[in-house]
Image (cartoon, rainbow, N blue to C red; front, side, top):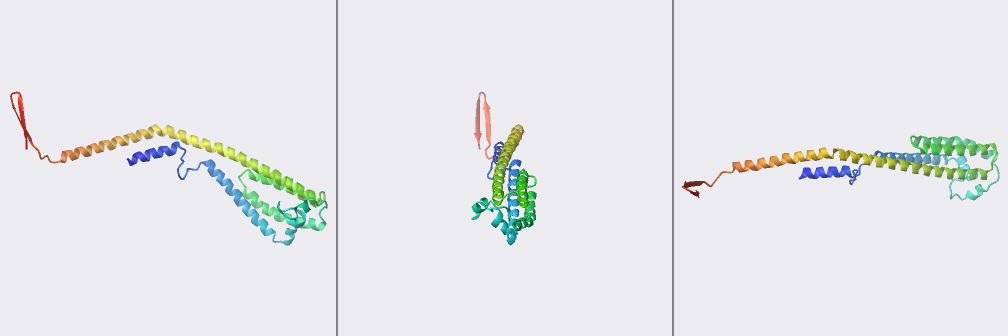
Length: 239
């Protein structure tokens, strides 16, 4: 009975794509988890690097006087509408801060290695560098630099989202293919498994019948029957 349960349970797992309380993970699912883990780690390391850099007062001035830091920054409107070009002092601060920014970027770029998101980030950083160069050369105002920055961030966000959509589609197709492959494999070995199970049941049946026969043969007889025949009549007595 136990073997029957194991057999049926095992076949059920294979044909259902291993959907148990702890589902079997396909290679596609492992890949998705790997990418998400890399992104999370890269974001955390980069944020820690920038947070440490912002302890420097000169670095802080970048977000106070030149660039909008976040959507909720209190100086967002002021910087976006600033028509003045950066002063020589502000340009020097930016020059000193760029190597620090690049150092933190490396953590992100290295952290995203082996994922399509590395390309998305590199493209975003290139757009930022183009803006830095224009500012340092005095070709654009602080407001224009921030407007470029916002456009670049929005474009990067769209590309990031599109990249995830593409990855999800590819991994979903990969996952479905893996599950279908497992089912096809299960169907191909099903006759063999059934034959093995049948052989096991036949063996068990023969074993049980032999045990029953042994019990019968070893049971002492307590009744004797004697029969006598006279012509066409037979009389038997038991004692």
